[in-house]
Image 1 (cartoon, one colour):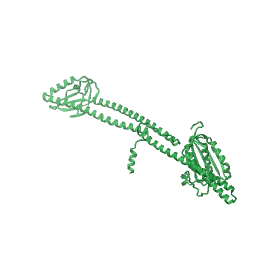
Image 2 (cartoon, rainbow, N blue to C red):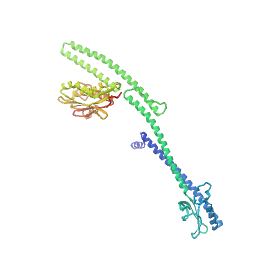
Image 3 (tube, one colour):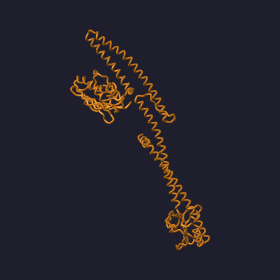
Image 4 (cartoon, one colour):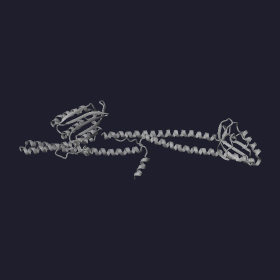
Length: 475
């Protein structure tokens, strides 16, 4: 199973347009090279075959003539053939058509090895076929011929050869054609692949843009369909049906949540008001304390519903519709100073380190991040110690950090700390519902940011990173 999956990975195609272009270009070059090699081989072999055939026919004819008419008649026949050849030409093809019959070179030697006829300036090769016979043309240029060294009836030798220039010419022509074909085919394949890739990339970017808008909370967006009935249109159609279904479910969920919150909040508020009124009218101190505790529990339950609904709204990113440029330094300083009295009453020192920073967001939500973290520090930090709030810009991000010297969160529990309704404090009598840090993470995510614990235990440092914005940017 592992070997098979590994083989699939090795044979997988590139997943990027440039990589695909390179693969197509390489494949086109290989195919063209293979076809060009086969074409060259066939043409080369055919020319070689024709040369061999002409040399063989000419040799047989002269040998037959020598057997019938004698050695002297052969010498005269070779001289006549040499005279019929154009001056300076010895080869398979001459410069003018129709001269094929005069395109052979000859050499005749007697039994003693003396040349008796033939203008072919070459040393006698070994008997039989020779593919490469060096010779010198009448103009003094060296060349290569191929021919047959045949034995005559009187013991002499007859050399019939043809110039291989045509082979070299055809090889050169084929090489140029091959290079041109490879270049044209590669240009065509690369151009076609690039055009295809640009079209696909443009459509994918359009889908990516719509998906980003949907993730940002605009559930009215849908994937573009071009009406071409291709695979991307099919995928977009399926995704749009899925988005329609999700939108319907989310709408129903919001309606149910909103209705449930309204239906519960109103009677709970009435119960709380009646409990407060009953506590005010009670004459028995024990009864009054019991009614006050019940009223506080009711208010806490109302707060729990409000927090859950707020997180649901933030998760849906509907709050992004009211995003504007926010002065983070001013927002953080304002909410931190508002918490200073309660922190000092608890014996804690508030330390601020604020630098100018701007984000696109909701000022109240950003302040709620700091407020929730300060409330968390107020519960867990040790009296006499300090709680620090830092706001600064790092690169293209705005960073908010809140640090305290409380017990911190064990490393094994840190991944769970931002989950809803998770309380690591085993003492259920302490205030809170385990939604404070969940709210922090939801607000950070709504601003396309992150929330994480960067230090502790002991102590805890929570870091919020939000994309920095420009003062003149628009939402």
